[in-house]
Image (cartoon, rainbow, N blue to C red; front, side):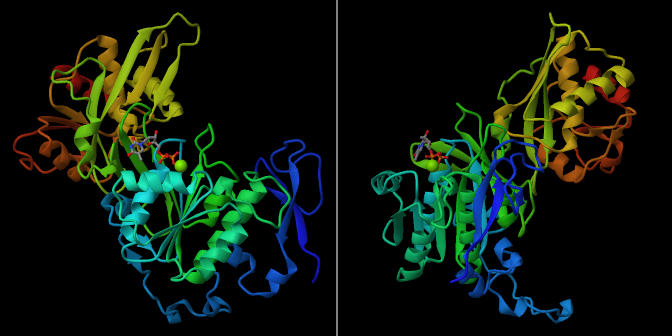
Length: 467
Ligand code: TYD
Ligand code: MG
């Protein structure tokens, strides 16, 4: 047997080099290069080990080799199966694609294991399923499944962390699993490497093994991943490139609501949201989530603005809250929760320059209610309305909703799907909408809602002050 090839991989950034270095040439970290077996020589002969195969894009499909005209490629449409959890299906882009690898990341205790156990148990009625646990004992998994009242007849479990053994067990299992959950990827390790479990090289190799297994056997694989303090999946960035979809499970501590978000999806839209509530019977779907992200206060409060966001393919009503308070600091604080910090700083500058309202001596805190993260620019206008409302200590008019992007020259720019957002607001009984001019519907389109179309920030601020 030929000697296995080795490389040195930085445990910080995942960069690799053929020889050892004291400092990583890519990220500059010291003493982070650790030895890493690329592939044993025997595996290299066995097919499916080309660089592309290792990436998992078209591994195990012999017809993919060689140059072909794209129009001659037969398109076997991807086979999707429903997970029987509607919100999970939605985030996956309409069901789980056969042979796909989905990475589910989230904070400890957020409910990743619960979600996947529920999905697996429900799907195991239709296809053989295997739950591999590296963190909890089999008794713990079984106990939880029983407490949740899940169907267990066809669900198989394995407590194992060695990826070679896992794949061996999966290959020899009868019937062979069509669905596999590995909880979590950070606990897995490969015999080929000497590095400790949880290290970058182990995580990367274990994931690569599972990706290859998924592509070769058509088994759908869910990987559970822990997130770092910064919110990324612990381990190298390359993990996100290797898998077909990356979902993040998020939620505010203390809140029972959980949001599953597609961050990457080769088979569907990204930023799609699925909403769940954690209860004593596990996770329950929230098919109509708009209501839960409104604070529920019956009278309008200063510093609060309601917006319609459209993360993914459905509109969602969310409340943005701001607190503006005189700052004792030379550099007043700007804190954004659920929104981008830099964007807040930019918006405050536009508010000063084009709205004539300065908050340079004030601390500004902005929060999106319900622990949800809003990434689209439609939040710009509601953020500024909330800030102004808090600064003036004057609530916006009752049942007012707003959305729109704010440009650097003080213009209010349109956002996609304006009409759909307005419809959602009307459904929830909103009476006034402050929206970009280009998003305004035809006159009389909304009978019970006054739509105020604005082109400039100053117009929007004036409209908000009226109400
Ligand atoms: P878990 O799925 O173990 O989280 P993760 O795998 O992401 O670390 O979820 C654990 C949390 O969920 C724990 O704090 C208790 C809570 N929980 C419930 O509230 N109800 C339930 O029915 C279950 C199973 C868990
Ligand atoms: Mg867990």
